[in-house]
Amino acid sequence: MAEKQDKAAAAEAKKARKAESKAKRGQIFQAFNMQRKEDKGLIPWMAGALLVITGVVFGIGWLLGIQWFLLPVGILFGLLAAVIIFGRRVQKNVYSKADGQPGAAAWALDNLRGRWRVTPSVAGTTQLDAVHRVIGRPGVILVAEGAPHRVKTLLAQEKKRIARIVGDTPIYDVIVGHEEGQVELRGLQRHLMKLPNNLRPNQIDGVEKRLAAIAARGAALPKGPMPAGAKMRSVQRTMRRR
Image (cartoon, rainbow, N blue to C red; front, side, top):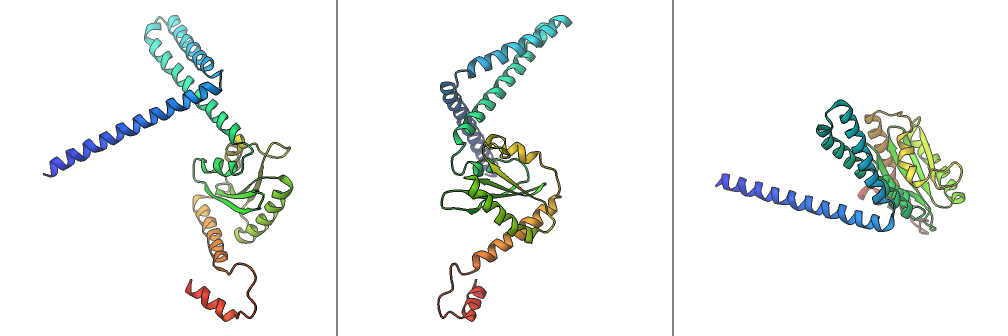
């Protein structure tokens, strides 16, 4: 009985893997078709990479007298180069469409690879300007998107507030945009990766816990002005209940 159940489970898992693989292939093919329609240079670049790299490897093999042995290797490397070009051009297209849209920086930060702790919209305005907080090996990075004259004030306020909590932990600030001193959306991840490593992993956890504790404490406080006649004792009772 148990053996039959194991076989059934294995068959279901295999079926699920096949379905997932088929779905991924479908997504890639759909992305290729969309990119091909918008990017007329995609196919020539991919085909050129395949032919050039295959030809170079075949030529090396011809000099060594093993050209037919190296031909499949050249084709594999050519296909790999074509796939890399496809991925790069799709990524460039996606970033160009997202550039300037509200929340684009938060989307880019959510796709960071590695031990990054991203908290979107720790400060903002009604005009959809926003400051996002990132904690990682460099320290605390505040990433702002929106009108520069407004986000500079937001950045300064948030930096001052965080500095009281994190002590000597380095704090960096970044404004996403195209003006001098700003970082373009497509280069945001690369910019963060180039920052120096100042914290150890356990220090990252400590900084995150301190900031989370302060945020939770602030969320527990009553919002807006205290009603007329309200007693502090009532507020304290409310805090204890929470």
